[in-house]
Length: 289
Image (cartoon, rainbow, N blue to C red):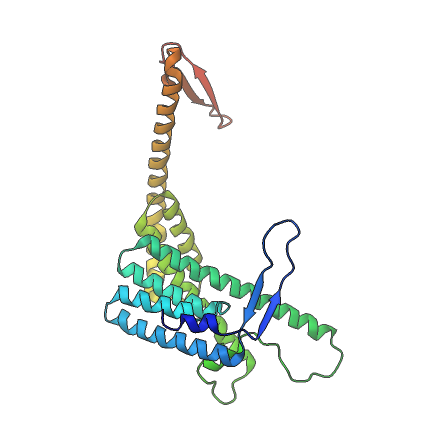
């Protein structure tokens, strides 16, 4: 795969060896980061592949676009969660165009998980920076802790003159929310299309999250509102169907076990106590209850 060998052959500048877990037999975890120059080059190659994939997507060549997006993913440094989330979300969009619902769900979920990891990492860095500032009684040296990696920052569009770190941070958060909304919309649709109790319930949860987001377009907000009206009865119907099928299978299994004794599941009736809401089992020799 073009570019992937370079990512593997380039030696990282820094290796953090975490101590082995005393309670497991796992090998020590190695966390690798490239130098800023290496990271910039790899990210540039990844972005070139992404641009090719975007062109293929616009031309409705979705299978080829997926291949290019995956090449971009393989080149991109593994710790750049935002850039990888963008690629995964775009792959999900391709799978939706191809009616590949399961694949779309997986890619969109990978994107969302990556953004979750990014949010936790940045929150931890922010907290560490605040604690450092509280405990630091010396004069500020003007150096701010890095939130965005050097390579990713270099590959980003140049900030206008007068741009502050706070403006950049706010823009970063807006970008993260934008990609999260796209990934959630794509996963929700794929879950709804695939159907089944679990998927429909998951789609409901995604649309509920989306309904609380303020960065949706008018068209997306209308879709969310419509789906939150349509999905509950679909989810309930799917639940009842699957529960009925499950009880049918259990009944067949029970009949097979009771047959040698001249009995069947019809000899046992579940009776609901209207006062407590609980159930009790009654036995009837003739099976009429």
